[in-house]
Image (cartoon, rainbow, N blue to C red):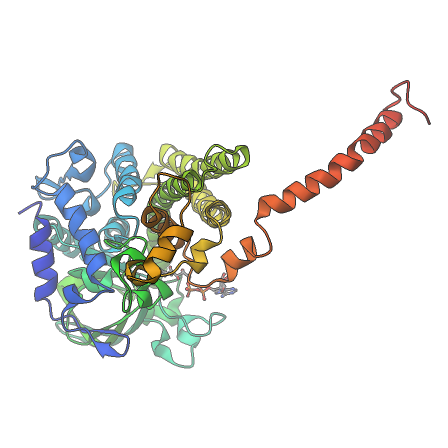
Amino acid sequence: MPLRTKQNYIDSIKAMQTNIWAYGEKVNDIYAHPCFKPAVDAIGMVYALSGSEVKNEGYGLFTAHSPFTGDRVSRFLHIHQTQEDLKNRFQLSRNLVHKHGACIGARCVSTSVLNAVFTTTFDMDQSTCSDYHTRFLKFLGHVQENDLAVAGAMMDVKGDRSLSPHEQVDPDLYLHIVEKRPDGIVVRGAKASISGAAIAEEIVVVPCTALSADGQDYAVSFAIPSDAPGILHIAEAPAPNMRRLVGKEMDYGNARYGVHGSTHVIFDDVFIPHERVFMCGEYAHAAKLVNCFASLQRLNTTSCKAGHRDLLIGAAAVAADYNGVGSARHIREKLADLHHHSEIAFGCALASIYTGEKTASGVFTPNPLYVNIAKHKGVEAIWEGTYTAADIAGGLVCTLPTADDLAHETIGKVIDKYFKGKEGVSTEYRIRILRLIEYLTGQGSVVPIESTHGAGSPHTQKITIGQDLAKKIEKFKKDAKIMAGIKGEDI
Ligand SMILES: Cc1cc2nc3c(=O)[nH]c(=O)nc-3n(C[C@H](O)[C@H](O)[C@H](O)COP(=O)(O)OP(=O)(O)OC[C@H]3O[C@@H](n4cnc5c(N)ncnc54)[C@H](O)[C@@H]3O)c2cc1C
């Protein structure tokens, strides 16, 4: 079964015995939970697009030929053999965000972690005569053949950041080996904010930082099912998720898929059989594994965030149209600026692919300099986009009433009348696009939007500043001409 269906994935996640807690309660039915279902559906949508259901025009992007199974496999589980592979994987993230607008970590991070462990185990076997790579290839075949969702867990909870893992007062603040048995190892610790960990079938764990000989118990990598005994997931609880506990579809902005879906994953003395252990004490290889994972994931996230900015530009443009100011010059310039900054990041990421290199194992990896510049620029563009979109959309982004208000027989009519924008656009659609902007800009508090629009939108201040300059500009020009020795001006 190289490519499976959406339903097959959903059934598999529902059947798992994953120990998940959210809002102080155990989650017994993950697919019924308002803070998990959208994330499962987003992954399901990706399966539907890439799997046997649709042989669409993106099929070449979604799948690749695996030299390890001899079959076509999901691009998310593919080991990058060529520059073209890396480019295709990169492009895929942006294209998919246009459809889900959220996070598909249980598929997305798999590429980075599988490629990083592939290349590191290859190097380890060369230098230490271990058989980690052979073990890993077996695991890779398993996930490729069954088209599994795989999360990647690198980030430890880290405690005091100024201390190394082995220096922490509580040694469990970085995941580590607590026991070595003849048939495997036992690990303890916690990985923080792991995208899609509870809605993936497998979690691949890697170390979080470079390590010295003192930290060799922390040099550990392995694969484990997300519902293995001893694993506990504690759900994220960002403000928009809380609204899902009380609101209606229209209140969420991105109702279908708009949940990130990360969990904090606690490993309470979890047994890992030998065949699933890919690093066990080889501290000298930890830094390379961390850096390879980071470079690959920074490439994916740069593509993903470009997709988010595309959606944001589109949403802000629609909001401006609905407000009747879509053709205003300052609005068009702001959108073009955002597009410009967004594409700088995307272009740097492409440069990292075109200047990338093959590792000894044959994995094609991005140029670390350009991929780090790309990630950095992309994040700047996200924050800038938040401000720009908030500016363009107006203060209602943080003061909108709810879907229940709009549906109410008495106040609904009032809202419909007074929250209208341009003639011909329904009030409901205007509210919907503003809710999407609220979601895309991550506004869980009134403070950023209130400070943007309270006492006047940014352009009104520019108008006043421009009017002041208009009064002074002739004097400024005159002074400049005198200084430049241009004749005809009084000294
Ligand atoms: C939504 C979300 C999804 C994520 N998904 C994943 C995932 O799928 N897999 C995964 O492995 N991780 C994931 N992460 C974790 C992510 O990689 C970390 O959040 C990130 O690396 C920052 O670590 P931190 O949150 O512990 O912040 P910190 O490391 O505490 O950083 C906070 C600040 O402290 C500074 N700082 C930290 N250490 C030091 C030091 N020693 N000296 C000086 N300054 C320091 C930092 O520069 C920063 O300014 C996710 C995070 C989020 C928010």
